[in-house]
Image 1 (cartoon, rainbow, N blue to C red):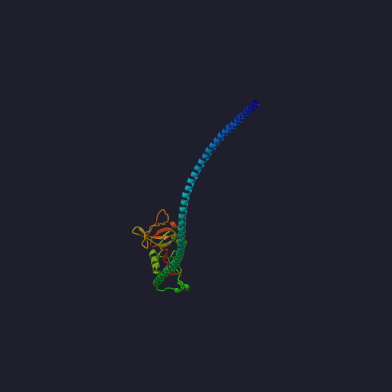
Image 2: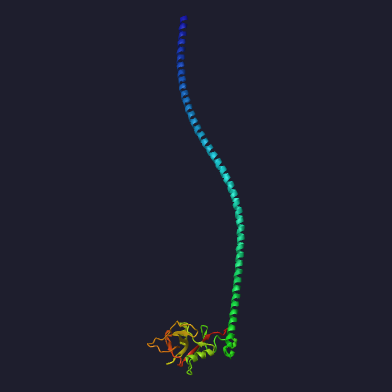
Length: 305
């Protein structure tokens, strides 16, 4: 029994040992599995730590960049604030200058207004001065004309105011005289008696005139228009040959030379104007002894209102 019990005990011990061996193996496998799992977890934790460190490094770098950007933005903001303050001061200064400019503009507009008023006043004053000057000149001219008229009238022994100054207005020329460009003309074209050149001039001088002096072609055309046709006679004019030089009775040398074109010029020291001729070719030489019509001329002296 003892042996049997011992055998059973041994069997139990062996069974227990086997069981324990199996359990130990299982536990060892579990330990191995746990160790492997631990290594995996450790590796994962290491990887995760590295990743976290990397992310933290990136975050740090990002934070550093953000800090730099924030610092730059802060600096920029300070500059902007400084610029804004400067701009505000400049705007205030500009506002003051604008107000001053507005005041200056108002003052300038007032000055322009005053200038326009002064210009208008000066213009009116100038017009008034011109009017007064014109009146003065007209009065001076009227005085001179009255003086000349009086002197002209005093040349005559008798002067018909009724004939020459009707309605208290004197004519520019005496009765029976023709006015042309401030000169008066009398054409003595009666059939008889005619006169020599000397007699004709004396007749004109007795009437405070002289034989006509031609100044230009226009005057010659006027004369030719008012002389009557005569088959053999012309009209004496104030042109004569003195010392081989044709000279007008006022002392001027002739420069017109409106002589008729003839093959042989007749002798003579005096000049006639012939009717119905080309005005620029209407003069003819003649001797003083011949009797002809004549033309008297004097300046228009009488005042005409």
